[in-house]
Image 1: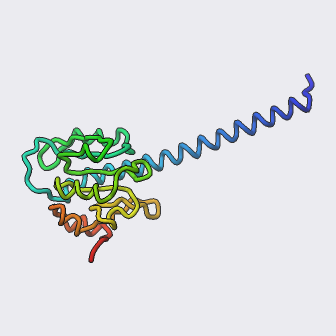
Image 2: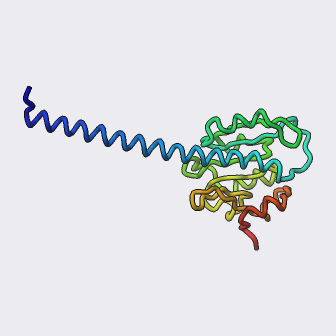
Length: 187
């Protein structure tokens, strides 16, 4: 059977399109794997903060870790519900807006591009009123008055800590956590 030049053109086009989609899927899966690793590390940090931050005494029955906005962790945080912090079971709560947030020991704010309605001063007010540790991957979060910012440097998750904001929020911090962090927002 002889192929016409038109059939050859369509065969080449089909092969090119298939190759293009293969490259896209490989690139996408690589990016998803990197993002998944990034959020596994951030989830581990959120849990480990419970060991290096001190909160005022509370009568709450649970230790609440709250995510405001889209949850970039997906199900990664759910595993923390089998653990405890400060002798209390951990509970993961998800809120779509800042107005809903209450009784949270840790509040993680999603990146601003996914949650444009959160204004940083409002986010920090929650920390001050409720003795909540405010954490985010938003650019310059800690530098702008947040307590702990996740910063990607050389493909690693680093911590920027604002000691002044922690103190204003009524929270204490271990020297061990300070040693592995960059301090920002100091006078």
